[in-house]
Image (tube, rainbow, N blue to C red; front, side):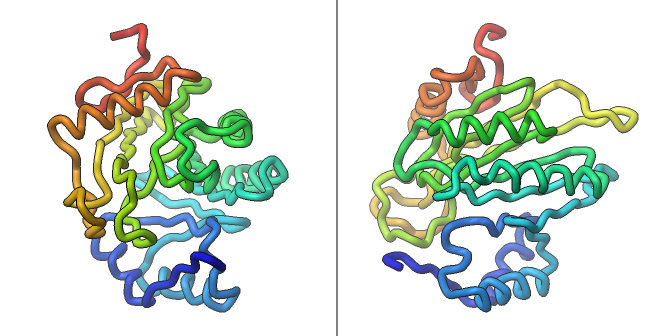
Length: 250
């Protein structure tokens, strides 16, 4: 391959020593060094107590008494042929008792800020099947957010801690944060979510692999970009602090 990525197994400790609790393994680099290296990755994650999901593997985690189902789909190349896998995986986490379902897609076209029809079709289908949140990555740039049937589809979070390029031209990124509220075992319809504008590096001259929360003009610019990206297919907009609201309600 032109680009093949690997890292020491000890790097899994970066997750366990921070706030990362689960990872999606479905992407176009997880098998760069073959099936054995993929299994080595799973073993390294297991050794650090990190939940993993992706492809045909799903996970259900107990978070504050709520069972959260996790589904990871690798859409590239197969596109809508992944519909059945999506259906099967969502059905599986439901069977395993999931009360909240999050679907993570590896999808989209590199450097494109507009999602393609495969993304919108699969994102809508995921929610139609019962997903409560859809998030995506792969384009290496941010894409917009769509509210669909009261649920959020975050089409691309761009890069974050990205080791594949020493100085990528686009360093804007964001953390998506959403709070889900349950009352008497029922998920409430209120959406409490925000995008935290960030850059993938603490300096703009080079990639130092230190994601940094954006502030001032850079923060405002990233929020403005996200709102522009979201306009074609959503009334959702971010306010100056990155909080999500419906455009006609502000």
